[in-house]
Structures are given as structure tokens and as C-alpha cells.
Image (cartoon, rainbow over all chains, first blue to last red):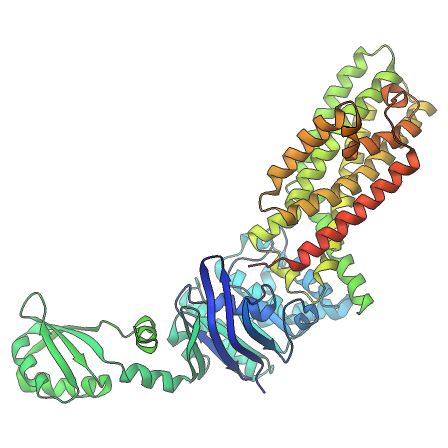
Length: 308
Length: 252
């Protein structure tokens, strides 16, 4: 049974469309919501939490409609992508308020606060004002707040944004552990596919207010691979390389750039191209000093998926 | 509806927000106003030949009908609006407490914090003025009457400015207009138009209680019971309106 189900969901703010015809079923486990900034990920999360109401379509979360359904918040923990910690409060005051609003109190609440701050490794900073926390510490404290009442569903909106690589790795490990060891279902968003790839195989791609693809990440990868790639190759004797490249069936076109040492190669099967390239370089007796893909990124895949 | 959850939630919010209002950055405003009132009333006290009359008039105009709506506006216009603007409202908006009750969890601390601040300011002003002339039972009686009016006014004005903060995106502008133009000017005009201000009904209550100063001889007063009933009805109406608006509000 899906934990979140959206059908023909629409949300707009005046002239600005947040979501339009958004349809998605999120199953238990970790699900990654991937899309560029402004694609509608946060709007989707706000609809899940009932912070805003849809203009069209429907959404159900854990089988219930979220708008004006405060009881649902007992089962959801939310870590927003924006700074939401009250700067004048300490971490302990922040968690205590959340706990009391979740009907936790006394020693049970104190014990649970200790557990979650230990889990997110914030024991030493819990009595400091949150206004003085680093970005990574704020993210951890927000996750602690989301976890405090042990909710069934965790909504983590861009939890890795703005964090350094070490914190990022720790947070990824933490999110995986929350699902694996603590049984939380997690919906996590990012605009970076490989970050999501390290957490889960289940993803949904969101672009311009629509869920353009969802499913196993390998299928998304296949889509990326089927999408013709434009690759720039720079080096000596590029003309000879162009000649041998044109004989390959996976090469769609070859074009010279500003000078004869730079080529743009369009390929239909990037994996075959990259596997075969060393042999072709050898055959053409050329040298390659630089090579990069123009569109090995999500934006290109999104454009491809929506046919633009 | 789980009333225990509602009660615990309101209690938690009340404790948290009262502390924030009284000991947060806005505490400096209370201290500055108290110092200003102490200076003005202290100087007036040193020059006064009829302390009970002069002291009552000063507490009436300076504290009750100037600083009280202003302080309620400063606290009330910003409490919810600041949290919406800095997005810390997410904490309350994602709690399992119906937003109508969360609104009450903002109103109570606002009323309490405004009342505590105004009682502190009134006490400082009263001490600064009457401390120079001796404090007998008349002065103490006046103090208690002013404090009672300040507490009632704090809760009425809080309901007004909190509703304004949910209704408008720039509540401070509307609050300034209301506090200075409507309450300050319209509320002082002769004739029936002043009946459309909170000040009129508070003053009507005061004219029934206070035995000194201009307020005791005020001939435009409405009946005390009618004024009390109207202030209660207005507070309840504003609370219901504010709670409804807050419940319907999208927190994007």
C-alpha cells in the first residue's frame, strides 16, 4: 500500500505554477525525490504535510487527507530545507517543545531527547543556542526534531544541501540507518541524483511541477543512457579520431568546434562509446587531453523526458 | 477530539512563547519604556502640588491609553508574523495540534506577556511619582485600579493585534495606524465616534472605579457592565476570527 498517493495534483501561487498534473505513488522504504531547484519538490512536501491545500487533484498520506488534519502529524516527522530552528532557543528547548506538542513529557521525553541527539551526534551542542550552530549542526538538529516522536514517515527536504562532504556522508549513513535499523519510511529530496543514489534505488524525478518518471534508479540510468549524449573531445590529431568515430554505429554525428583539435561527438549509446574509445584513440594514433559530457546531468535528462 | 492533547499543547506553547516574549529581544523595549515612564513621572511628581489628581491623569494618559496599545501592538503584531516570516512557524504548523488551538497557544502568552510588561511599567511609573509624596491607601487603591485596567486592556488589545497579524502581511503598518490614529485620535474625539474604540470602553470601566483625576469626572462614559460585556464579546469575536483565519491560512 502506498504511503503517499498523489493524483492529478495541482498547486499554483497566483501566476506561478508549483505543481501541475502531478501523479505519484510512494511505497514504503526510502524514496528519493529528485529535481532541479524550483521543480516543485518543496511544494509537494508542503502538500504532504497539509501546510498548503491543493488547487486541483488529490493527495493522501498514510491513507489520510493531510489538509487540516493535525492528527496526521503524529505519524510524520519533517525536516525542512529552510532554516526553521528558533534562533533564540537552545537545541534542548527546541526538542522539548516538539516533544510536548507530541504529548511526550517527564523522564520519557528527557530520555528520548538524549537518544535522538546521540543518534544525530549533537550531544555536546544540545544546550547551545541554535542561532550559533553551523549549517551541518542545524541540519542534524532539524533531523533530531523530525525523529523525536518516532514517526512512521520522515520527510527530509534537501537534508544534504549546504553541508560539507564529511557531514554529507554522515547524513546519508544516518538516513539509511533510520530506515534499515529503525523502520522509518523516508521521503528525501535532492537536486543531485548521485546523492540520492547512495541512499536508495527508488526515485521519482520531478521537473516543472510534474513527476516525469519514477521507479528504480537503474531505469532512470537507462533513460539517461538512451538519451543521445553530446561529448566534447579535445586533443592532437582530432581529425583522425573523427574519421574512425564516424565508422561506429553508436556515433550519431561528429562536428568540429572552433579549432580542428576539438570535436563534439553525439552518441546514442554512451556506455559503448566510453568502452570503445581507448581502442579508437589507439587506432587513430591521436592523443586526448580533455573530454567531458555536455549533458550528463539531470537537467538534460529532464528535458529529454518531457520532450523539450 | 483529544482534549488532553489540546490542553498539553496549549500549555507548552504558552510557556514557550511567554518566555520568548518576556526574556527575548523585545524585553529591551519594556525596559526602555519603563525607564521613559520613570523619568517622565518622576519629574512630574517632583513638580506636582496635587499628586493624586496629577498622578492619576498621568497614569491614565501615559500608561493606560498610550503605552498599553503600543506595547500590545509591538508584541502582538510580530508574534505569529515573525514566525511565519522566519519560517519557525513550521514547528507549530507540523505539530498534531489543530491550528485553531495553536492560535490560542499564541494568544495566551501574548496576553500574559503584555500584561506583565505593562504591570511592570505601571509599577515603575507609580513608584516614581508617588514615591515622592508618600503612599497611603488612596495611592495604593489607584495603583490596583490602574493595574486591573492594564491587565484587562492587555488581553483585549492582544486579541486585536494578534488577529491583525494573521490578517495582514504587514501587520505593523496596520497596527501603527490602529494604535495611533484610531485609538489615539479617533478614540479621543468628542461624540459617538469614540465609542468605536477599545479605549472608550476601558475608560468607561476606569471612570467607574477610579476616584481621582479627569477619568473620575468623565461625562462620556458608557455603563460599566455594558463596557465589560462589550470588551469580552469583542475579545471572543477577535479570537474566533483569528483562530479561523490561522486555521485556513496556507503556510507556504
